[in-house]
Image (cartoon, rainbow, N blue to C red):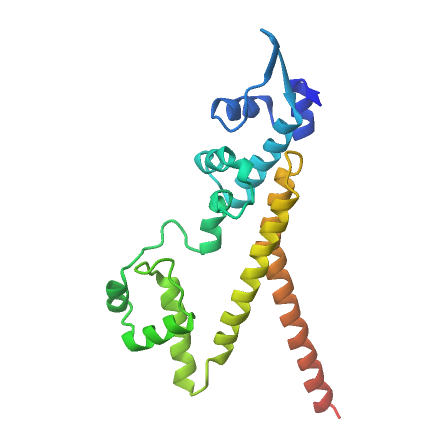
Amino acid sequence: MEYKISELVAKSGIPKSTILYYIREGLLPEAKKLKSNVHRYSDEHLELIKYIKYMKEHLGSSNEQIKYALQHRNQSLATSSTMIEPLMNTLSTITPDMPHYTKKNFISHFNIDASLLEKLLSDEIVVPLGEDDYTEREATMVRLVEHYLEVGIDYGILKSYVFHAKALAQLENMMQTQLCAVRNEKNFSTLWQIMFETLFNAKEYLFKRHTYRIFFNTLKEELSRNTK
């Protein structure tokens, strides 16, 4: 279907000036020119506008990140990670201003027991972004294990978290493959919304709600026993 600019504005909810800006920046393709002053836009424009809006609002993606992703959109959600690139900062949970340390400097700066660190690296409880790329997030995990050891209990639950996290990551990778299999130019932004909402909203919701339910039921049982 073809649209006048006014129709595209109405359907997308994005101002004309912004749409023209996206075209100038290379985020949207040029409109089809019927005459020198008559332009028509397509369903592709509408779908890409939805994608750009979603990536900016939910991931804070820059124009350059979005442009890079759109240049590879024929590989969208494919096994290559080109289309996943805008999600990587969010997945890493590392903020842009967070300091990075080499392994040696990390041990020194946070006063980490080197032998304990090696054990946690082997257990995959400490998972640096790179072989020599550590942040305070890794220090937080080391400190947590130190608290377990301080009170004399095993940190087996963290090892279980690792096992289930890796299994879940495999399922999430399978989801990506499934999304790739049904991708077309009309569902481009919807597939990205499915991926984002699943990874960052549904997962947190389901895990926390089920933890809440278990804890709540335990509390009810304890209160029930105490009132008898």
